Length: 418
Image 1 (cartoon, rainbow, N blue to C red):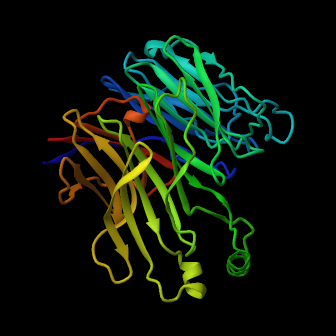
Image 2 (cartoon, rainbow, N blue to C red):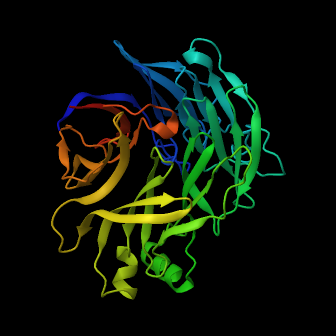
C-alpha cells in the first residue's frame, strides 16, 4: 500500500483569542467534511480589538481551483469556541453555533446553541436558523463543550451541549424532515467534556473525558507550589454511553472505559468509529503518570505514553489493544495524536503523529500491519479528519485539517491511498 500526499497547503491564518479556547479546542467534534468532490472546513476567526471571552466567529470555507474561499460567516464575533461542522450526502451542511445572547456586558454569560443549515450545499443564500427544543430547564454559556454527529445517508443530527450549572450533557435528535424526535440529558459520574459522538440508524454513541479540578488536595497543593498556577483541571477517566435508538430510548448509564486516577495520569480521547455491525471502536492516548506528580509521588514509575484501541459491543468492552508505546527507555514512535480513517471496502486505519515528528498510517482492520510513512513536509501535531461521524463517506482519500509547526496557520492535507 502507498500513501501519496496530493495537497499540502495553508487554508487561512488565525490568532490566539486569549479566551481559554483556540482554533481546535472542540477536538471531539468535526471541523472538516467532504461532500462529493467538495471539501468544507469551519475555521476560527478572532475579532481584532474584540475583548474575550466571546471574541471569535466561524468562517465556512471551501476549496476550489482558486484556493480556499470564505463562503459564509456571521456578522458579529459572538463565539468563544470553534463551531463544529457536519454534512449530509445530499450536500446539506450544518454548522453548530453557540452565540452570546447579550454583547453589551462582559462578553460572557448566557448563550443560545443552535444550528445553521445550508440546504443542499447552497452556500450563497443565508443559512437557516434551527433552534433545538432543549426541553427542561438548562443553563447554557460560552463554555459549551459541544458534541455533534450526523447520519449522512439519512440526514439526521444528534446535538450535545453541556449544562454549565449541573454539568449534564443535554442532547437532541433531529430527523431529515426537521422534527426534533427526542431530547434528554446524559449524567456522567463526573463532569465529562470534549465528546466524540456517532450516529447511525438512530443508534447513538458518546465518548467523553472527565474534566474536573484536581481532586487530591495534596497533589493540588504540590502542583501549585511548582507551577504557581491556580488553573488545575485533570483528564483521567474515560467514559462511554450509548442508546440503540435515540428516538425512543434514553442513553444508558455511562461506563468507565479506562482510568489513570490512582496514579495521577492523563487520558486524551481521540476518536470513535462504528463498524458495519454497530460496534463502537475507540481510540485514545494514555499516560499512567505525568512528570510533575511522578517527581514526588511515583518515583518508581516510568514516564510512558501509549496509543490505546478498544472495541465496545452492546455497552461492554470486548477488545483492547495497545498500538504504540513510547517514553523512557523505549525505542520507536511515541504517539502524540491520532484519528481513525475507513475506506469503502471496510478497511480501518489509524493516522497518527509520533515523536520524533512524523505522520504515519497504520492498517488496523481486517488485519493489523506495520505503519507506513505519510510524506508530509509539515507533520500535523493536531488534526481533524473528514469522518463518518461528521457525515463524510468512507473514502480512499484522507482529508486532514490541522496545525503543524506554525500554530497560527490552519493547514489542509489530502492523502490518496493506493
